[in-house]
Amino acid sequence: MNFDYSDDQKMLKDEARKFLAAKCPTSVVRGVLDDAARHYDEALWKGVAEQGWLGAAIPEAYGGLGLGHVELCALAEELGRACAPIPFASTVYFVAEALMLFGSEAQKRKWLPKIAAGEVIGAFATSEGPGAIGRVKTKATGGRVTGTKIPVTDGNIADLFVVLAEDGLYLVEGPVAADVLETLDPTRNAARVTFDNPGERLGSDDGASAMQAVLDRAAVLLAFEQLGGADKALEMAKAYALDRVAFGRQIGGYQAIKHKLADMYVKNEVARSNAYYGAWALGTGAAELPLAAATARVAASEAFWFASKENIQTHGGIGFTWEADPQLYYRRSRQLSLVAGAPAVWKERLVSQLETRNAA
Image (cartoon, rainbow, N blue to C red; front, side, top):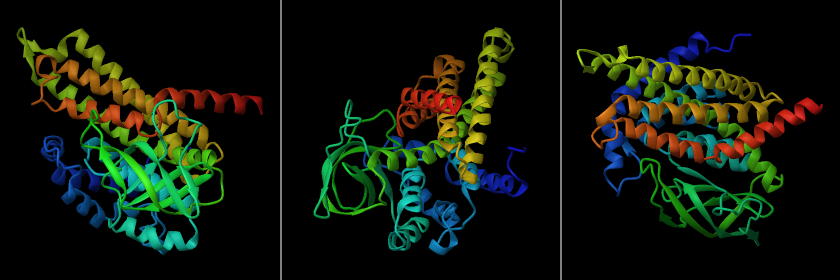
């Protein structure tokens, strides 16, 4: 079985890399980081929409390209590599996937074309703060959703929310009351969002199972974004190790640096293998998706965090400074590791899935 990209998918990936190299250098990321009034790069968001990436996995009948999830994984990898400061994950991995999974025909026809065209920014609102797992207080009564969610990634710029209430998922249209939160990665903002809005039920599944179905799909796509970031961090560390000279030789010639680079490479390749497994499960609708998603999520979170911090260490005295770029990837590694549940949660899910499979 070949788990690599096809030639067409590799071409899509290459073109995405060229586009992002031109439209999303680190100066664009820093532009959002350094300006508290900017929460994403509007020009890049428009450009990505014009490329059709927002609708890559959305069927043509709903205004998308209908390419498939593996192609979306390839795009996610390049977006992660570029550390793109746009609400792509919230809108595409979460809200669009929730609509495709549970939306009625009317809901799909109303919202998916807008998502594909970049006219709508989405947000997935499930968390109600630390210790609130399993105790959802948000209510949906009389066609109205009321409650507070924190943190909601891209919650202060979203037009459309998928909200977890006591009895299921609901589709809620903004505007809403949102307060921006201070986070480690301001290039992907988060907010406290208070809902008192009309809401439409999204599917008939109970809230916990519907939320987990969306999270499993998003976890695979996030794993590719994390993999792209981890690969870029390794490349940055390698380039600096070959360029920096200390005591008359390249620092890449020292054993300590060699070991750092080798360890980064190994973790990245483990993450890549598991991400490809997840892409296969997602693209084929395999029953193994929950196991594959948990495996990909755990491996990718570990790889990106490790690569981002070792990149800083390899850069030595300048690595932790504001002027150096490694910080951008460390910030993003922390943000992506929490956006769909912490690695500890996914490790528990992985163990649970393995126990279930072995007991069968």
